[in-house]
Amino acid sequence: RAVLRALLALLLVGWPAAAEAQRDFAPESTELNGLSEGLAVASEHGVELEVVPRLDVGTLGPDAALLVVGPQQEPTIEGLSALLRAGARIALADDHGATAAVLRAFRIARHTPTGRRELALRGNDARPSGPHALSRRVDALVTNHPMAIHHGELEPIFAFGESDALVLAGAVGTGRLVVISDPSVLINNMLERGGNRRFAANLLRYLAGISPGVASEGPARRVLLVPPAAPIVGR
Image (tube, rainbow, N blue to C red; front, side, top):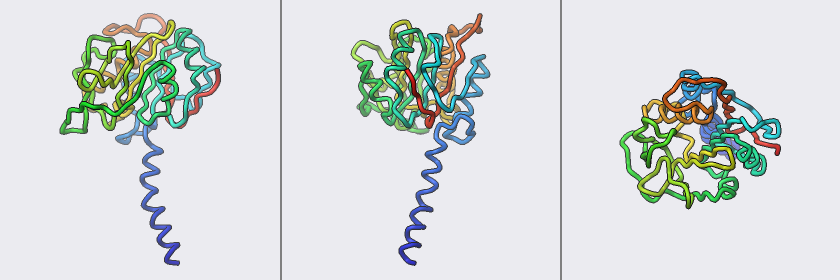
């Protein structure tokens, strides 16, 4: 009986953390770690954002726009590469490495940031490295536990110090790839910060193909939000 009580106690201690992990990046969640504010930002800026429980890339065309947040499973490299080269716009927000193979295919390396500036609020902030549609009117991005990313030919959009990128963006064929090394910049708690909220708006408009600073003219791309548990399959 003592052993059973001890096991039960361990389960009860571990359950809240496991339950919390399951709610990370939940699109409908209004908790601190949910994405409901991101849905609100999309609505505010005229971006059609659809949450998908499963994504078959074989059903998508060159006008596809994807926002993949905190994936738990490794996405299909061939499918995403083909979509990008055909003209799709894809953002991968991942700090745990599920997209590592995809990033390697595009010669993007991941590592622990070497230069971090401490903020009293949360942790590390990243500064824009130059003008870009994604950094428009954003002075800094507040992060949680970020990784850093690097590509030999791409200048960071946001970086810690001079070279440890938080956000990279580049052309793949006629498509565009955005890589964010800390998906926490998009959670409800972080979108309370003006810079993070403006970045979320910039990102959604960029994926939808809406030019910075102007109202949507003509048909914009529908952005598919792929939450952590949603598998990405097909080719």
